[in-house]
Image (tube, rainbow, N blue to C red; front, top):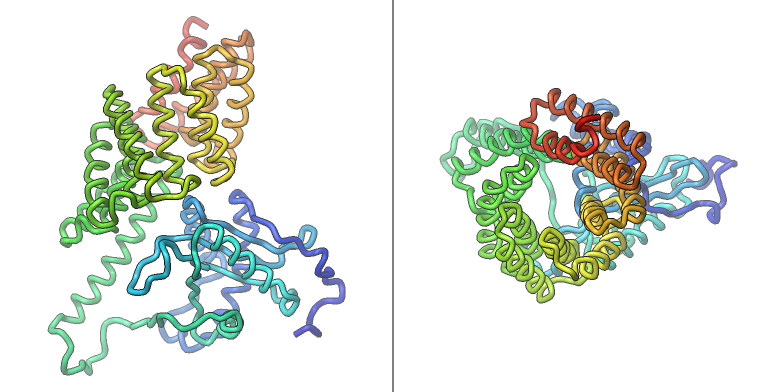
Length: 469
């Protein structure tokens, strides 16, 4: 209620709505703790199902989910704040539409909306939901999916904006009660429980595999993805969309290990499956084709790689927006093929893609950073060292912030920076950075028990600096 607002609460004009940086997720933890406490108070009927997680444990789980969702191109954290006081936030995603109702190609998903207890009743929830609305419409979603804990008074807030009942989620404790409906299928409660546990375990394994991949622990990700794929195959669910998503992730892990032929085989299966289930112009199909072009090119089949990349672009132009992530990924794949084959028009293809990626996905998105890496290589090959140094410094800093200083891609960016410094005549600085980067790469490779693919690349890149020094 308004009477509960502290007297020093900022005036509405002092409250700022902004996008929250992905590198500052932990600033949301106190508000998540408030939301957890509110859920517990609103749903005492759930107490019989199990004890409540601590705020710290609950946050670590949610934090991992946030980090995974932020890898998606249209996910965003929106905040309201006054000065250094964070007053509320909303986490919104854009996902492909599914189900029996025609809701467009995409729907929004409001994963979280919370306003600090001290700030409620001041219109901050309205500002957040309006920002969610604007974000969803900007990406072609005309509805947003919201889940509300049974008993939570937030239900009334959303219905005031026109929300209607869609599905109702139930929690069914297992094993089932002894009183079984007469028409229930003849499947044992033990089997039902085991299948439920198996599905949850596979979901956790997949999440761990994705996290290991993002952290650059490719061997661990490979083992985890292999377990999930084997289990899905044994259960008879191979070729479905969940299986294809896992297979796509496993292909990217193969890239991280330099196993291009394995990656190609997996991606050919993904492309065929996506074409069958989602169509040739679906975003997921086009994205898989862009990565397939790279796998083919890495094996020296450049004409075939260019053909695949151009086909991906043609399909994207037929089925996706020009600013869609997979449209831009297809254009970037073509630019990569052109750069690697020394095509004279590479820059006029690459520059617009790099700029479009920064506008559409942000300057710190992994695909944007990949385009900057390619630009560094192009400028270096053209001996435009001063220009290349500016981009290389920015890339190394961005990868350090988003991936961490020990990630293989960060270390590779530092190795490229060292080479540029050396070729620009700044020998002492180049030697110091190269030695530090090679030593860090060797240590991280040893600690991870990795096969050394990235370490070999980094040593090779720095060889002209460190050899004979």
